[in-house]
Each structure stands twice: as structure tokens, then as C-alpha cells.
Amino acid sequence: MRVHCLQHVPFEGLGSLGPWLEARGVTLTTTRFFEDPRLPAPDAVDWVIALGGPMSVNDEAELPWLAAEKAFLREACAQGRRILGICLGGQLLASACGAKVTRNREREIGWFPVSRTPAAAEHPVLRALPPSFEAFHWHGETFALPEGALHGARSAACEHQAFALGPRAVGLQFHLETTPEGARSLLAACADELAPGPFVQAPHALLAEPERFARLNAVMGRLAEHLFQT
Image (cartoon, rainbow, N blue to C red; front, side):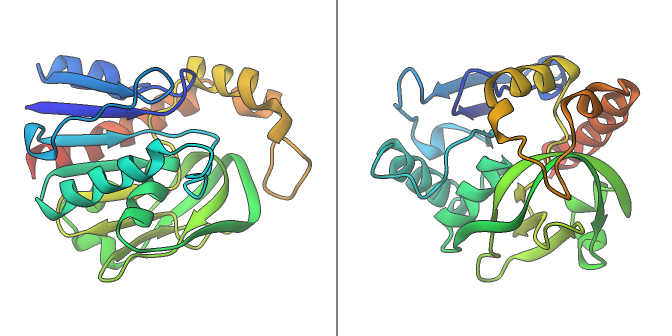
């Protein structure tokens, strides 16, 4: 399988998805927009993984490659490619498919519970999510649902935590791939975003329980396997 990763900043990588993909012998290629924004043809890949980043999908004037990335995601979705969008990547997928991305009513950073919707329990990929689980969050914006999308999950701070377009295109607002190393990298690069708020945890709370990451990454593996097999 040919997997193409869309990476927006050096400090947000594949996390636990890296070893998972390596174990399955996929051919992995990457567009690192902070180095070279060139993209492959959508029909040259089987699965697109769009990662997170601190920029907004609405920053096209400052980051013109965002428009090209959205066009790539739109075409990949139309062709029925597997797509997994994570945080900014989920917002980009939503925007590419016609939905607005706006400031969320609360900044959500830290470990907070997410609930799967009843409809998601019937979806071939989103059914891999537990009915209720703890996810890692780091976002200030949120996506509306594209037309025809299935609403997949919600949290107390954010109504739209996941969506699916057809059986193979999935956008997540939360993180399942984050490892302790990834969380430390986020803290080092984006500590200025930790302004006090009802859904913003202190830095020590983000790293206080390492076993949380193992549980998180296990859910990531189950969801990735469902997408891999779809």
C-alpha cells in the first residue's frame, strides 16, 4: 500500500502511526510543507494521512500551499482514497469538502473524554472508537460538518470531534497518535497557547501519566487497522 503523509511542522509527526505503518510494510512518502510543498498526484497513493499543526486552514494568504493541499485532499476524497485527517488535518479535510473552520468556543488542550455518536458505531472505520474514551487534544479551532458527513464524536468542549465522508475518509479533531515524545515537542513549540481556561491543562498534567499514551495509541492502532482493511 502507498501511504502519503502531509506534515505541516517538524514537531508534529506520525507518532505511534509511524511504527504501525512500518510493521505493515507500506510504502511511505511525505510532503513536508515547511521544506517543499510539492504534492503527488492523488491517484499515485492509496492512503493520505494529514497531520496537525498550529496554523489555521484559513491562513492561505500567508501560506499559499494550503490551497493546493485542500485541492489535493478534495480530489483524493472524490477518488475514494483512504484519508485520515488529524486535528489540523481533519480541519483541512472538512474545509476541502466545503465546510467552515472557525474558532471553537473553548480552547481544548489536554486529556479530556470523547463520546462516539450512535451513528459512528455503524461506520466501517469509526466503529473502532470505543463508546467513550480519553483523547489528547490541542486545538483552538473546530470544523463544521461537510455536507453529507457522518458526525462521529463529540466532547464537552467541542461538538464536532470526528466525521466521516463515505467509508474511507475520516477527520478527527483529537489526537490518538501522540506519544510522550510528541507531547513534549508540542509543549516546547507551543507553550504560549496554554492560556488558562476550563479546558486547558497545565504542562505537568499533560505528561503526568505515561500509561495514558499507551491506551491512546492502542485506539489509534484499532482505527488505523479498520481503515487499512476498508
